[in-house]
Length: 339
Image 1 (cartoon, rainbow, N blue to C red):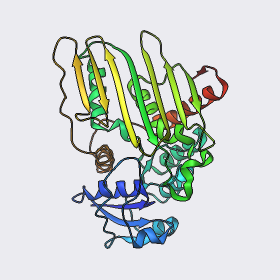
Image 2 (image 1 turned 120 degrees about the vertical axis):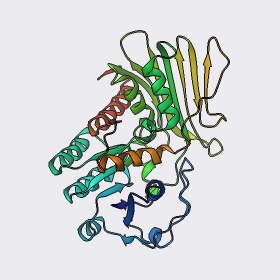
Image 3 (image 1 turned 135 degrees about the horizontal axis):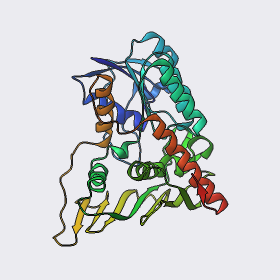
């Protein structure tokens, strides 16, 4: 039985809690740390742009801390989940790895490649696994679409467009999301989901060309990017968090193949639809499990020694941060940025 610690009990910390609770035959949530004692004494629903179901939190059997270093020193843990603001990822990931535990850290990996490199170095030096929470790689609909791209069932992919739009996130602790020096703005916090998925599907692009808008964070709050690859392939993505509260949240994609289109829209039911050129449209069956549950289960199984496909590496997570920074540079300069 693996002993798990969770650092940060905000929205994503509740998500991690639920995912580990679903694996109760393999893990026990031994300790939880949050700097605000009130969250530990009265855990409840936390606002976020996806309803990940943080209900039913029972912390009665976990040791509770407001100091992560104290938790790591006193508790014999096997792995730690880090759900802290982005600007704290590198510090606390290194702290946990140096304490001898495996680390699952939320995305984005860090604010810049240098911080990412320090996290990778700490994992390697201490012989521990480090996984970053790029959940879209594990999201069932996105996984199904990647399989369709990989096996060529509808012929060659010709074009791909991704969309991720959210109401302005006014719910974060000390409003850190809307401080681009701490979050990287919507580009690094939100849009990176799709940039990383593009990276996952096609590898790193040769270059990017982006345009953007700033409204609330002092950084990139809305970003539209063309990913430039060799050959007959058009790839773009748009992401931002300057939509109205009434808009809520939407993630979507359109994939155009030689013999079919695949559409996904989180606001539609069914959300995933395939439109073959020679057959009637249909909605394929995908897992009903949350991508959050799948990614954390994958991490736990790897720690337990299961031989599983490596869905992402820390180095790939680092490169996705570099990709986002190239997009931000392109939007700021109005120039194509080579990678």
